[in-house]
Length: 244
Image 1 (spheres, rainbow, N blue to C red):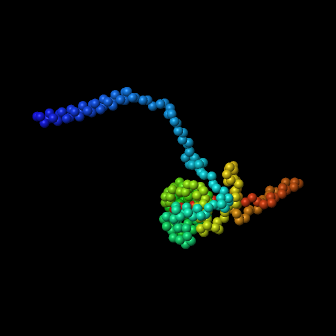
Image 2 (image 1 turned 90 degrees about the horizontal axis):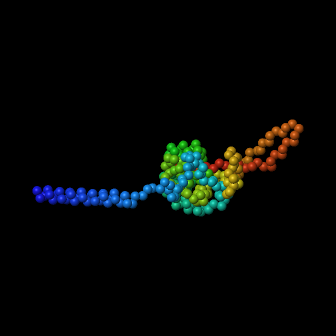
């Protein structure tokens, strides 16, 4: 009987403690009740990227390859390759494929084309967007491989600094891709230049033969206009960097 009484005392004490705690909590809420302000003191606006359209608008400004490759730091590009790429890629002529394909001659090479390497379906499909690894294509891809080719087996986060990417591409160009033409300087890509109008013809690559200029037939009895002394060069399309 005394045992039951002792248990009842313990349970009563626990119950009383719980009631006290609950009472204190309720009382505190009543004393210190605060209402949330109708308008936050620091409103942070987040721009609406508009999905794919917004992503396209946020694309980085492409370099003027005809200018930047002439001044690129190839030694720095080699260092970037050594520290960030050699764990997955070999860049020597005749070298084996590793986790990623061999990158000898990668600049200008058709996408997903290196013999003996098993490319992901995503990279094979990327051929429709970038048939070859042009300078532009490499610049975009090396910046964020997983975003440019969603589903690629290449898990590398990317080379974020544009200057570092330019140096890396300049180095890769020396590794079996020297035959891939360097575009002529393009004034429309110079810092501060207005973007080229849609459909404008880019300047041709250095060493490329410009197409002959065509002159519209003159009206009867009028003097035909003089043909331009030289056709404006056209820029070779840029392409993306090799991926898995």
